[in-house]
Length: 231
View (cartoon, rainbow, N blue to C red):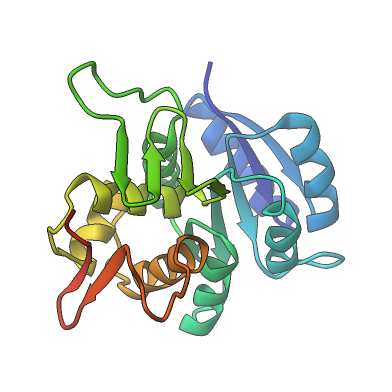
């Protein structure tokens, strides 16, 4: 049984086209015409991934993310006609995992969907000889349960934030360039927009650091990228 995807777009033709294409590739697809309808359907269908238009009546994509992220960490890919980097950053900062700029090809969209679902599949339990729990001082990340804690506090991370932190914790002290982190996150759907990593790192720091301006866990290596502080 394929994953369930919720497509949210105010253009009926776009919804129908995406639904037909993804259904042909084995996915179960439901659709909504605006953010309000999407909130209702998401509660009923419990999708594995949401494709979300930004500019919609009643409740736009940004406001949908604000409300949905209060309780759910399901991956979200933005479908946006806005090409300004500021708008993309806003979406990522609110908790979107990726974005596709309109107009886009169906093959590109499918590649992004597959990459995000593959990345965040909860059934991807590590093999018996591979560590699934990573610790650094009070920070603990469990890949199997997908739970992150700092001391006694549980931290809610979006799928992309979780994966980014896991990549860094798996190799403490190793410096990852932004390009490499994006490639690890997006796989074949890598599009080279480095600002995406900066936004995700900033969001993770806000959630795990006592003082995000003086990070204990994720260090910036200026001119290169990021690393988790060595043990």
